[in-house]
Image 1 (tube, rainbow, N blue to C red):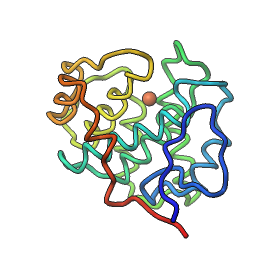
Image 2 (cartoon, rainbow, N blue to C red; image 1 turned 60 degrees about the vertical axis):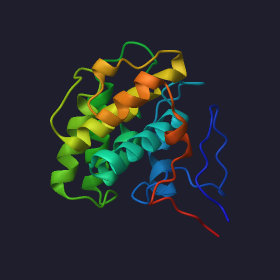
Image 3 (cartoon, rainbow, N blue to C red; image 1 turned 180 degrees about the vertical axis):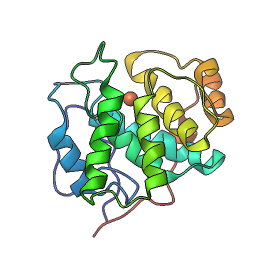
Length: 188
Ligand SMILES: [Fe+2]
């Protein structure tokens, strides 16, 4: 039995692991996005970060609501077009454009309404903090809860959801780390 593997950078991708948890982001899609990614060696915005953003976002979705398909795709696309790990203010918009390209070519089986939320969440994930839409909230909070990877404690005031604020206030990630998404796949 094989399950989701949370990789750590640098990534060595074998054919025997499931890269993302939600089936909307199947391995073929993840690999296609990786092929379009800029090569930033040892990036703190690379695949292992995307995987944790997905895990965090799906965890939040089980408690807060939100669209798990959009949340998973946000994790995949939001930092995919970074050209560096520092100042790159348009990378979110470029990630949204890439998602549009994949959708136009039939690679994202989501509705137009979902695509618009995905594009918005990608485009504004670094220049906006709070939003009313629950799916956007889970996307952005899922991303910010992973600030710990660079030694930054997430600021509860910059988090949208009560569940994310509770994690940040207690710095207890055990529930998230032990969470198994209801959509987690196993492959024989
Ligand atoms: Fe990110």
